[in-house]
Image 1 (tube, rainbow, N blue to C red):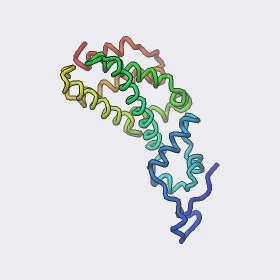
Image 2: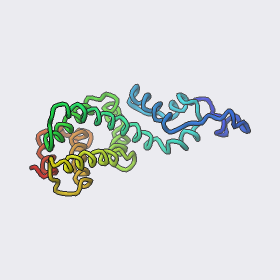
Image 3: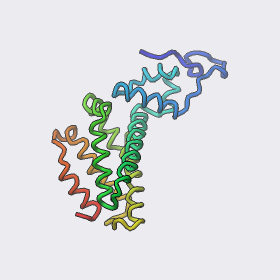
Image 4: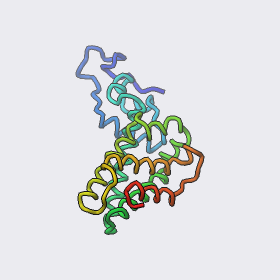
Length: 206
């Protein structure tokens, strides 16, 4: 199934600039997020139909399906992380205990997020590279977010990091990923106790 041809893509409307559908990345992201939330997938031909653009326009704006999936998943993840930080900070926790509480609650929400779990189950060969490699840049951008959290805690004197904030954040995020995707990666049950022990060690509090 495909959407109607987009003027300006060469499919129709040649020579009529005023009729061209101008698509922004933000528009594509909003539509892709809506479709992912509804289906746990991102079928590009259906997204084309949603946006009423041709294939060339869509790919020119978003790059590739993996890149767009990465943008969608990062957008959802960072919204969740910010909400969790706000919630945890109401509890008055500081230092290592605050960071561990943020991790636990974030992972609980991700584990209970049906669209993502459906995607992981139905297309693990696509989902995992998007989530944990450079294909979708989700991991890289989550490391950025955790770098900020760790640096802030260190600057406020709440903990002393054994390594630079970004190096620590990289290891910290990898521990979380190994917990979240344990079943898909290794057919193993998530071990929350071991994950907390590793995170404390990464933070120099083990």
